[in-house]
Image 1 (cartoon, rainbow over the protein chains, first blue to last red):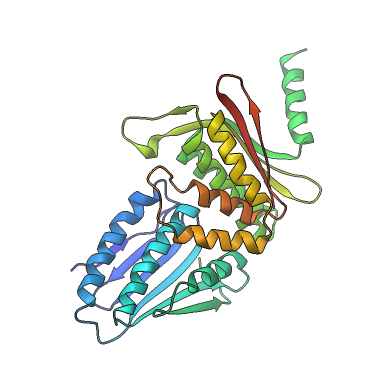
Image 2: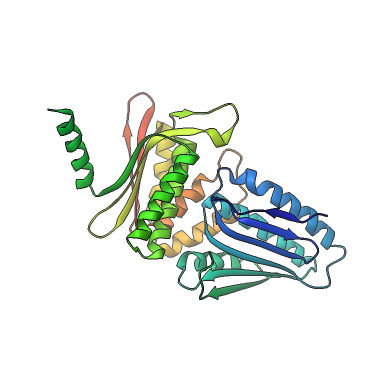
Length: 135
Length: 184
């Protein structure tokens, strides 16, 4: 399986899903013209990757680092879909960490992190307040 | 009245309403992006609190995307969604205490009435109730016909620091002018 890499644009985040290191990253701002078209291939890739991990979990946990500055409501829905896939995979016995990074003064991203954290039981979801700007 | 007097009056009237900028006509996603950049730049230059800028920007994006997607006056190119345009108006301004974002566009009367019912329910909620309503909606699978409108409206109500205001003006031909104002 190949690595997925989408560079950051004005309106869409950097997305990197590395099958070798089992690290996933999403960084930047997300309000693409068509959220379904942007996130569709990412979800498809994730389904294929997580499908491989279920029968033979990797030796080290899968780690996802989220560093978002802003996302619109359609992107929030898409993120929820990503997280639901991770949670169901973790429930099947794969170790997964999600690190939600935000600047400590950023009330919006902190609240979103708290909101998403409520949906996780098997994934370890970590709120990571940072003193430095994420951009 | 000379043309300059005419437009001076128009200009002054807008400024008198606290308008920072206003766009009337067909909006596309690329216009949304450019106006949003201008808005962020102005906020940066004025050293506005970063959290205020974020809230304002978020409301602005959801408002304009609603016009693009749901205005009854629309243009759609054959190639699909990204080239769609919806007609309406979006105004960002400031009064004594708040920034505000108003959007207005024409809708079918029945759709407008149903929008207003949803907004009435939102306007009656306190911020904790809006937040938990948002969380519920986030978990619901998206309906085919609904490209995220309801969660967009909740996002607008959630970022607004005062209850949202909205209304419908009947145009008499089965259509109505819908408007929604949020304060930050």
